[in-house]
Length: 410
Image (tube, rainbow, N blue to C red; front, side, top):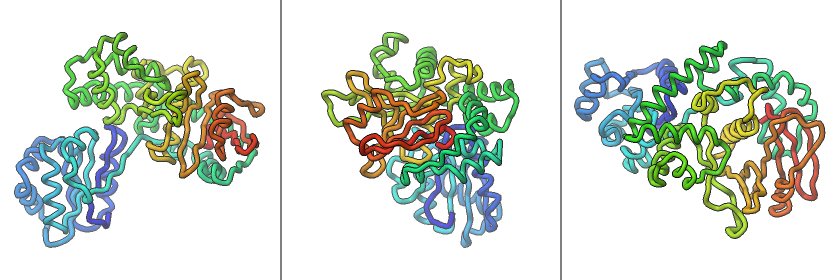
């Protein structure tokens, strides 16, 4: 906040960007002003340009010769936000600007490289598991943070086996999180019918309307069918030819919709890891949802975790979302050969290529899949991880240290 650069807070609607903006605003002890561009008068005023903006500040008692913080909510609504922000940054060093936006597509289209070196970007998501636990059970939150540092575990190759005793206490909360997702309003509401109502509202207002309008989508049925198809096939390879035949969209349109959904914070497309183009998958990506509550409302399924038929894939999706708390998106892949040997995730950390296998069940003793062993044989990683419900253990497979990690320790 003390640097000159413009701060961008980006993320889907309803994940808490405006709340965060107002929290930052409240903490400022010098001149400040908050401008919400969802109000048409504010939008029209800023669209008139820099002079109109400066007059607006002065009319509100702002002394432009002194430091002032300007907060602008939903910046993407401006016709030419890049030009306004560039002029402010280049010519009015006393003005510090903090903005929010709900669409990285609009940000990319409207800003190009005009603000290079002038901005700092933060992407905001819903609550991760740690934040969820902090809001729901402070004791377990403290247990997790005192006993389980994921990066420390894979670096030291050690894990306390006693943490397994907490599995039964953690699992009901994790199962709730996996079914309902991390939207703040959803997490903080304890009633299932209210959670569902909130998610349906997000789905209708943001995914079915806002995103559709952003992309100027004309084939609404095709767009909706694609979204449901993706939600029904999380963790699977995206075969555009099959999708095209299934729902009648062209490959070009499918690419456009996938790009739109990825850049409005709904889905994540995971690339394959490969070193041998002859034997390994190199092009097809897998699809996952950034919030499992949105995924589940897309297919209208809020069944309790213990009776679900999709346990494996939603736990896999959950694990990916957790890994993204620790590693950049470009450092996480999946691995699959043309003979269908597969490891759920491969993490690139420096020179390390860490395989991560996900099991949605309890484990009484260490077990290995043929695919996991195949990856270890081929790439000889220093460390590998098998995530499961309860088992906490470290074993050695030749020169690879394998860590069996309870899911709540991730």
